[in-house]
Length: 449
Image (tube, rainbow, N blue to C red; front, side, top):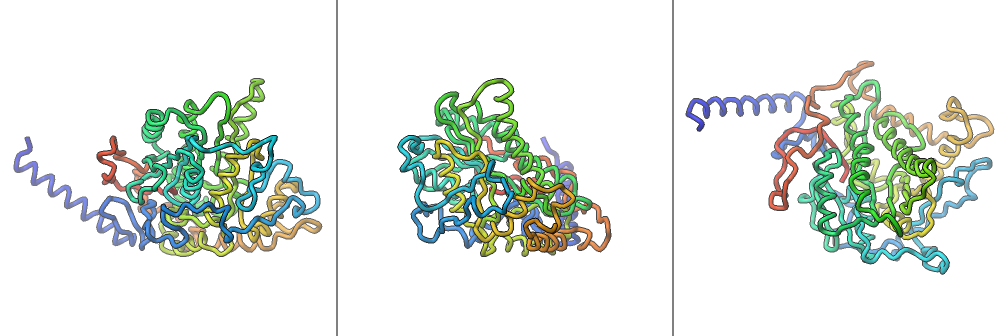
């Protein structure tokens, strides 16, 4: 039983802690929100995004099939557009997202019917995950999407949005167990959840870099391991792995993001090498999707390597994902659906706007034809990459912490705190009854979706 003296001391402790947080917030120009997350100058570095602030998105009730919309233009990039000597299309395909679906007219290899299939899509509150979930549901699939905070978003009308934070093993276990009890299987697993990182390697907070990699790579592996026992051991099974064009290049100031996307490609390859080494085959295919710039909420939930970047670059980060040359999330959702129903898809597939292809194709081709020392510079007789070099220079100027802090080596700032990197869902809801309860601990995480 608490006596009056204990109550007084507890009150003093609470008020002291509140005062310390307020002083720190004023010093660092940050705001401690009512749910304990940290916002900086209106741009939340924990992923607590304003769910009404996405002009590119329609409502959850908009389940228009992108393939039937005249606004989605058929990709004009063909294998013949690759520069001479570039053989990347031996191992990469171009995801189709509009126009006729080839397998619909192929009587020898017809499309896989998604009606009644159980599809799990991670990171489905917004962006690529949400668009994909909408598309699978429109095709008659039973869709379960995941989000760290599903209660912050309108309930989808024809699919379910479950709580899951893939940096937490317990959270992943709870979600997969819920799918097992409710549906008993998973036919299609779309591993999409992840977050962006911005900051140069020399000056970024290592804990934030670790958290980004944990989210994007180890988080994906956690879900993969937990979900695999629910996937069929014969017949149709498909895993869609969302990586990035960054899995093929290493632009300045994205190291944790880039490394995690490269690692996902290795995960896919290891799956096939393991079966080859054991002389076995699998009924499950892992098909990767490598998006370019897509209109998503990734800019709202980016992790910054140092505090200086939050106040100086947040607006430009948001605008990156609203560029006119960005492909819509709905187009990517359609591309993901088509890869799922294709009985024999290419296992690695680029997807981006035609405008971006003009910039990316010469760079990707160089990766498979030039030594590293020549890869990031124009070499006579090779495809011109001036546009790419200029874009990298601009990125380096914007997202380099030392430029903004005024010193060669800034060091990490106090904004992150010792608790950073321990998972974003501290008080994970134990039942549907407390799904509206939010964590009161201060966290500096940012997982898209």
